[in-house]
Length: 226
View 1 (cartoon, rainbow, N blue to C red):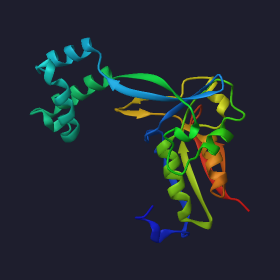
View 2: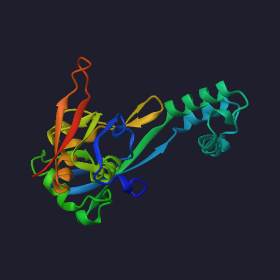
View 3: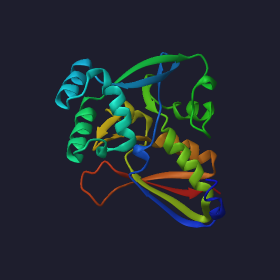
């Protein structure tokens, strides 16, 4: 926001497409009236790691270090760039997530996105199922709160992405994280964005994406509150 501060109150239309779903996010669980943080870490199963090391003629004990260096250089880390692409494809296919639930004695102790406070969470889950796992949409919330101050009083933000528009939707199916084309994708908690937007002075609305049949994409747009 600091970089674009000179545009404050000047933009009539800001449009984003398929950005929010790739931004970092944390997750939270409410169960038996208590809140839990979902702590996650990525790992490679030992058998798959050994197979990758063998396929690419790497010492098994050096695989983690090789992946770290690869992330800094990209496919050109290997003399044969095509081989580098194949290496990353193999690693990405093998990546798994391990997680645990850590009880939060108080929501104030939770690691919340900048600009989000416990009151937002409490209001958001008020009408949610008694037991629910949901995204905090960390990157999306912070991006939203840094973007709307740039809008002209008659301006609006428009975002095309995959949104959960009602907390009950989390009970109805898997909403990420998922792997897609080398990236991690999560549905965005639109219900939380609606609450955040209201406190920032904006109504957040969602409309169907009519341009592709059976699309799961929705269109978020804002209007300034009176």
